[in-house]
Figure 1 (cartoon, rainbow, N blue to C red):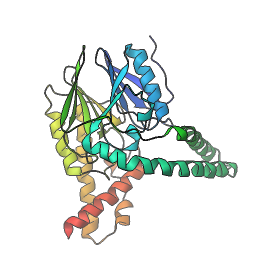
Figure 2: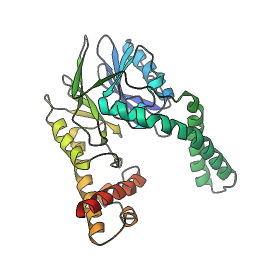
Figure 3: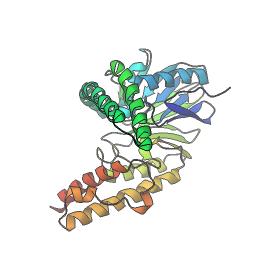
Figure 4: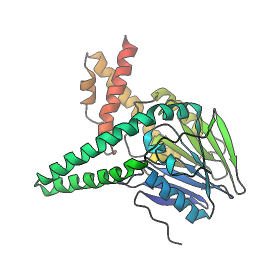
Length: 318
């Protein structure tokens, strides 16, 4: 059977009944997600940044498995992982940690209100810029951005707060007729609270934004030391994980964790050096991306990370 198609993501089969949904550039997924057939029902891991993309995900899950979606996990509070919640039916139980639910309740409503103002304004700016631009390369770039914001504009009326229905503190087990899935939190590294979906029999883990593969990771809402500690706990899972599905980037093996293990200390050292020579956060943000990471996607995130780490280093030096 040909793979179902969405303009927002591609489906990557991992094994029978388990699929990664990898975000497409320019679509409204915004991050990766997962489909896990428990045998009698399906659990989704994350719901993307839009109801439209989440609607596709739920429909495709049904097409692939023949079973209805009955649960969805929000890995953390970030908007690109949970704004799709409203697309899920009332018969779908949305699950998160207790802190994640609280942060969704606090931060999603003002974000939606801001989006309803900023997206139409940004689209109008881009359309005006397009009319006054003559460079073919820039016209293409602006045109692609316009297409994206037009998708966002159509989605605005559907954005709404849907909170998780069920919370857990450390771990919960989802039992199915074909397999068992473990929803686990080791605390917070990328954010205050991050959850993963671990499939012990298949040795697969969906780890959301605890892993960015080929992308600069967003450090600014988390704790870098805790992030690296959580890696040790992921690696200690028994049976050992052999396949990791990141929040951004391609499906990977645990070897991909080594890149972030290098990234965080390198940036911390750069930030500390700026503090030691009396520099500013702007100085830290202006540094060149180290050669080892210069091909990663999202280089503006590097500057934001340097500001964040500079502030932490400055406080530590007082």
